Amino acid sequence: MNSEPFESTIPFGEPGLMRASAYRRYLDEKQVDPVPAGMSTRISSLSPSLRADLLRFEQEGRGSEAIEVLAACVRHTKRVTIHFECGAIVVPVTVFPRERLVHCPMDMDELVDRHLAELRVLHVEPAMLPAPGEADPSPSGDDIVHHPLAPLLWQLALRGRRNELLPEIAGPAAYRVAPALDINRLPAPLVLLELIHRLRAHSVTLRELSLWPGMDEERAIRLLNALYLQAGLIVSRSHPDAINEKWFGSERP
Image (tube, rainbow, N blue to C red):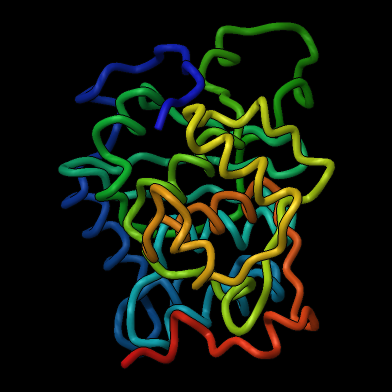
């Protein structure tokens, strides 16, 4: 998939980014709960609603994935800093959902092109950084490390680790693209844009979408996740196709 260009900032390996091993030791030293270590014991400072959302994934016996945490932050419109393990280093990404921006000290092209599939969430905390323009409305050099949120969400859904539907859109349902979504602004090749345009006119189940030309189950799942994160997906639980269709993702031969 094509992505919108990101401006270059800090090159990979910049000494200002902490090594993952050192950051893990730092988290262990901060850990005072007798519960086994995990993100669930380190998010008490978040809002109750966001904390409850993130705890769902921890209680399933696995760590939260990058797309799950970002989706929760956007859904609750909470500014947070997510510390991602990215190879040997830790990259703190601050999310500003209302402004639809992210702050990232690593070159965004480097993060998206080389490390998107390996991002692991180490820690989530309330954002310490102000939104762009809040502290000082005048332009500053820090502006170059702010990037649009939408391309990151899009690429993470299509190329990240998760290959299952996000919980909010999973289950028996029929899907259609919202009329308000600006299809031409999506960072996608023409073939995919044509499929999305077709989805604007027709409601389909996951099974049906997976049978379209150029699609399969995983590609259909990733596309639906990507559209949902762009606030461009209509999910119908009462559509006749949704009622009559067993959920493709949960019942297989």
